[in-house]
Image 1: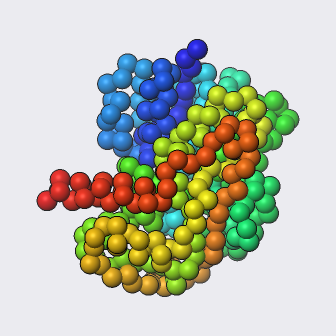
Image 2: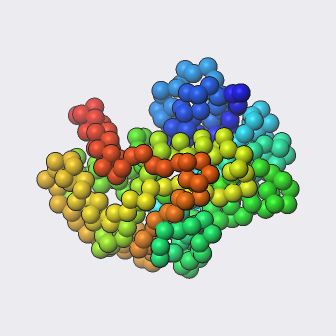
Length: 327
């Protein structure tokens, strides 16, 4: 039976892809977005869909959130300040949006007894990079004075709140921790590494790699992430649980830059710049971040279908099309 979903942040990068997927299978979608990092353009492919409603507003507006949650069957909370650059440039706004916004949405879901899926982040784990991270791995954080860890802490508070509502008040919650999602519509403006490096390569500029480039990450295609979301929304066994969603194909950022140059047929060089020059004094990064996705696979059968090469090929094609369009 088709359901009606509210997606907060649904005009954003991941939210818009999720909206498309749910509409494509016959569900109805209400999008709430303040368009600070999302855009109507992200929803262009479904703008005229009869089962889509787009509301320009904020998760900080308690009355509006309450009214929208009342109208739907299930809530997917994706609205958040995202991207390392935005969080460091606007720490106060990011912190308030991420904590207060989630509190308002979770409370509305509880009032109206709606299931809620909360999008969280691998930033939860902080500097813990010893091995592939399971959902119960320790959090290892730096000083609260470092903006990056305030983001990690805000998202942890969101998770704690959702889990407390589940355990104490029976709210059906599911938490998803995302590890470096990439794909079409992802803006390079907020510090996302693949869109930024690809656009530098396509423009013939030096690819700027922060630190010494030995830090490693895993990148998961947005279509794989959306498949994971949908699988969890459909599975009653996901209620009350936390799941990692991400690829396990690990790559150093220096190697990533080299692969992008080669895949793009670019003549660009790779330039290392210090974290102090890229961000500010006191910035901290983590050496390694790899998810253990066993729990997700065992419950739903989910595994990523796109390799890193697939992701780079698609991102380069998108950047070339943009370049052609803008002359």
